[in-house]
Length: 194
Image (cartoon, rainbow, N blue to C red; front, side):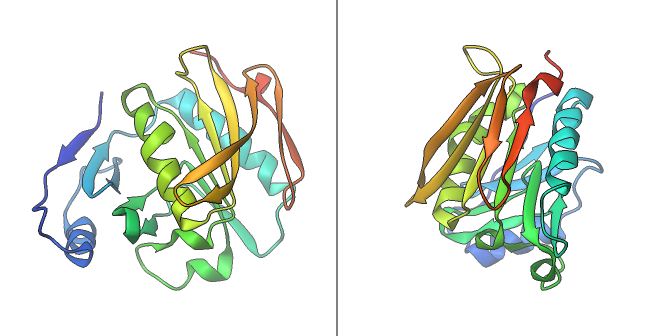
């Protein structure tokens, strides 16, 4: 199943768009994001997608400070890119999450992780990293199960404007290292291959 987009009035303000996103009744279990000003409703991820996210999350818990959390359904806002994004994983200091009932500023995140789904891989490869870089999120890990040359994990960092610099890439089966403050090696051979 693929994502559904909901058209909005282009004259609508960011606040109106967020209010619509917050107040609308969306299908239960779906992931609802605002990507480049368009509300996108995606079905729940497939089990293999969740297995990859869970394995990364399990490794991250061994290295993050006690006052940081790893969230799977936390919305992060990038108003300048008309984005309300829900990464597969986001690492953020926990006190920062208590400030809002619906979302936090993306700039508070230390790391975001996206695992591609076949139907919306473009967003994870293009739209979302541009928003994450714009927000100044230090690290972006893209686990691309549907990459043209085979499944890969790519770590991006050093955001400048809306662009990240690729720091390292690993084909599934190889290890990829996250730098400080994580100093973590993730073995992608643990990831299921479709």
